[in-house]
Length: 284
Image 1 (tube, helix red, strand yellow):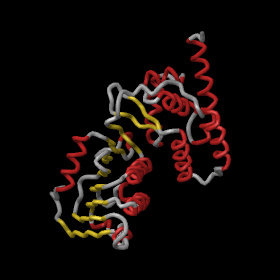
Image 2: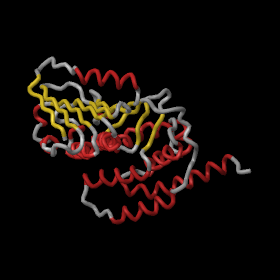
Image 3: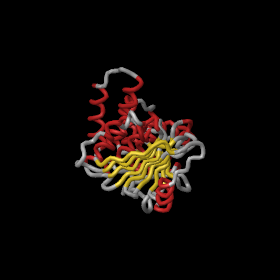
Image 4: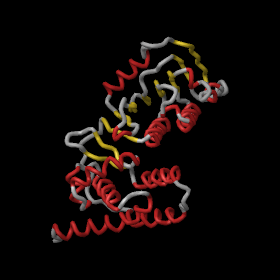
């Protein structure tokens, strides 16, 4: 029978080997160890991450905000706090994109390291996922990560999407509008309330050929004070008023009661400082 000390030593060796590969993707050695421990554990707490990664608990607390800003972990709204990671494939892709935005360095070596990492990490499971039931809330930080989650919601939508957002919202980025257009092609109805400043960006959706795809129902009002997207009443993503760790942040939820309140708010968003400036609807 394998002793506890031998098992822990083996786990640390696996994490150390792969953590050194991940340092080429913009992570420090300890950041990589914390990410891999959390990824292998499922949705662990801070104590378990420290135990499995070999990183001191106080250092884990210090490292988590930086990993959250990179978009590769989410802090679940639980008590005690638990952590969920992006799957390694998505995390690597996001880390490379973050690097592409900040530097023009050569990425061929990173792709080679990625292949080695996936080969080494494939099939590794440090612990069963011990989350008890479906997650209700999680905090998502970083504009790119928020846009990615919104785009994923659009990709998975089957019937309707509701968006109530100001002109500068991540939910109205070029990438997001493209995914909304794809959703309309599949027959999804898009309900959008936004500010007049978004008209130019949304021209492509308004000009879809009649008789194909879904419906684009748009309403323009001044001074939109909310910022959220709801897809098929199964999930909602809301921008928060203050960014976590001084970054843009959002709250994702599957809570039915909150989703119902958001849809009620969409029908009557309120305009304390403005008025309805126009309304248009097109059948795509």
